[in-house]
Amino acid sequence: MNSFKLAVMSFKRNIKTYGMYLMAMIFSVATYYNFASMRFNPQFREAKDLTVYVQSSSVVASLLMILFLIFFIMYSGNFFLNQRKKEIAVYAFMGIDNYKIAFMFASEGLLMGIMSLVIGLSLGILFSKLFLMLLAKVALLNMRINFFISVKAIVETVVAYLVILFITFLKGYIDVVRTNLIDLINTLKKSEELPKINYLKGIASLMVIGAAYYIAVNYGKFGFGKALLWTVILVIIGTYWLFGSLLSMIIRYFISRKKFLYKGTNIISFSNIAFRIKGNYRALAAVAVSITVCITSFGTVSSLKYFVNENHKIEVPYTVTYISEKQEEIERVDEIIGKSNHNVKLKEKANFLFVPDSQVVVVKLSTFQRILTDLNVKGRDKILSKIGQLKEEAVYVERPGVFMSLLEKNDIKIGDRVYRIKAQTKVPLFGSGLPFPCVVVGEEEYETLKSEFEEKQFNGIILDNPEDTRDLTLQLAQILPENSRLYTYFIAGAAMYDLIGIVYFLGAFLFLVFVFATGSIIYFKILSESFRDKDKYEILKKLGTTDVEIKKSVSKQVGVFFLLPLIVGIIHSTVAISVLSDLMSYSLTLPTIISIGVFIIVYAIFYVFTGRKYVNVVRNQA
Image (cartoon, rainbow, N blue to C red):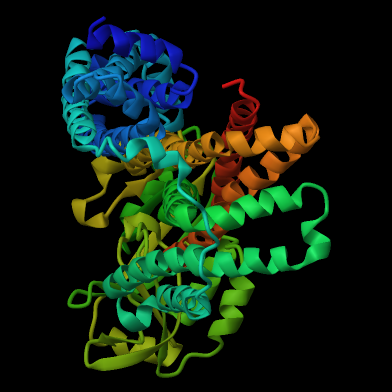
């Protein structure tokens, strides 16, 4: 019997063990094909305004998918190799050549890859229309999606995937060839011992993580770039120390409490955990960091979607805006609107000063108060009470469309005068028709600056049915000069919102892929523990332990390994998203809760699946 036939037989025998791996790979291939097919889809290519967004988003998503596939296949390959070292040793002692063994195991991995590629491509093609329809729905794209099989996307997927498989085939082959076969037979019989407790490192882990949080929250003091770099470094170091030392201290504390230890199956579960921490803390720390990345990344794209919905009120608070103090132009605009099928809900007029050097507009406090009241801005009373009276102070209103502000302003120079920033806010004011930051000053200061800068008049009108303003926009554009800065609900369009919708949709899919990666890391790690525990549970069954008690013990052990990284990851990501919330000047509580909730649901599925697999293994049903 040749090596390839042995590989096929081994693949069939271990198909259940490869179940999670195959599902993750099939999903990844299907997702990659759909990401690639976006670039070649004729409907998207015809929409010229979307082409750039689709092309760039698709390329970035595809690259991230390739990086994920490389990481996932490499990690899975290492797991399968470590898990089957004893089997490799048996083949070696049977006299099978070392290179044939390596070829057999590498071929088995190649078979899994080819199977994943064929099934993944088939599913990707089958559901490609649904994928693009969902994308169009989420991104609010008004377009018809036809079923389309992209030959170029198929070729790209096959080539990219085969290159990765070939590299991993070589790596698997070399790893097996270089393995020391003499010691393989004893690999699973290494004695276990309780890890030594390092109290200093355990306490230091909390201090390091606390320092990371402090730097992140106070990014303004340290500079955003430096704060981000040091936060990431310290969080990773602190997390590894946390699981390497502090977790041992906590588990040892519970074990020392006899009342707790001898309750139910705790003695089995927590004894196993205590002895396995030394070999598992790196994986647990990696899972915690991966969870942080997953939740933070999905929270970020969710926040983008949330930001767009909320920021639309700031960018387009009026249906029509223009700059003009000429009564003739104002009357002609009113006449055209009067003849349209729209009813006027609000007319706003406000004088302002434009400062060309600073690229800001200046309004007086009374004007600012009136506009907030007329627009019925949420929380305006709190904002106005905080501002109070202004003397040589000013209020800084962020420019419409600003995603986040990395620097907190302390003062601002207008002409020869410097004003201390009393408050910094982001509220609806003039909208994107006047796309500059606004500085609010007191009445006397405004009159002083008025002698230095030209005063202009802003006109804003709110109409009913703002979505139906295309014809009205074209009519107004014919009568207003270019310097009037005509801006309407129609001009605002959906370009920015198309981009955010595409990013959100692709980010959600990548989130699912990365959740698979995170779940798979802990799944493979715990599964390897189950094979090591088979003999122990067999002895316990002979001593009278029931199947129900074994299931409870496994549930606790697996639950601890799943729950601890989840708790740490949620805390890390909550701090990260809170910083993002501060940068965006928006409350991101809702998208944060949604992101954590979605992750917990998917993560819980992995927990159930892993727990059942563990029980089956120790019951000799794998």
